[in-house]
Length: 216
Image (tube, rainbow, N blue to C red; front, side, top):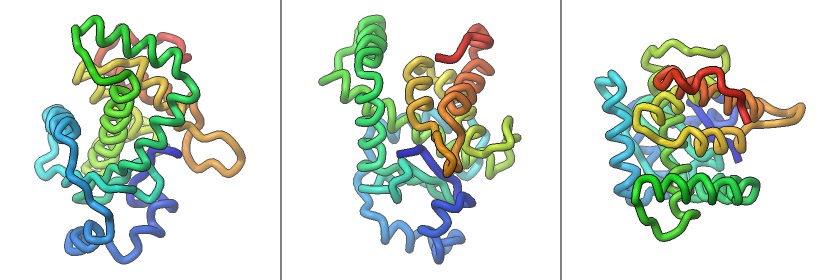
C-alpha cells in the first residue's frame, strides 16, 4: 500500500475517468462509500490550512476506501480512505512496532497525554500524514513550486513542512514515509530513502536544526 496520488497519476486516472471537473465531483462522491469524517481529522485539516494561502481549499471526504491508494487529490477534493489508511497503519506496525511503541510512549509521556492504545494513536497519526501529503498535491496544483521533479516526493516534502508547523513528531513521519516507499523494477513511486528524505527536508525547512541529520 502506498500513499498516493494526484489526479494526473496513471494509477488514479483510470478510476477517475468520467469524473473530471467541478461539476462531476458530486458524482464521484456518490460513487464513494462516504463516512462521517472523524472530528480529529477535521481539526487537523483546519490546522494545516492555517499554514497555507489557499483561498478555496479542497473539500475533505473520508470514505470507506480510496481505490487502495491511502488517499487521493483531484481539484476541489481530497479523499482519505478508511480501509486504505488502516492497511498502511498495519503494515507500518508490523515492520517497526518496537520503535513505534518507544517513540509514541515517549511522546505521550512528554505531553502528559493518555490515549486508548499506542496502536490507535498510530492510526490517527497515519491518517493525518496521508491528509498532509494530499494537501501537498493540492498546494502544488495551486502553484507551490515543486522542490523535486517527482510530484510524490514533492508532496512528501509539503507533508514534512506541515508536520513541523504543527509540532508533530519527525520520527513518526520518517518511519511512515520510509514504509510506503516503493522498491522494484515496476515502481512508479519514489523508493523508501527518497520519500523519507523528502519528508525530512520539508520538516527541516521549518525547523532548521534537523537539517543534515542522517536518514534512518
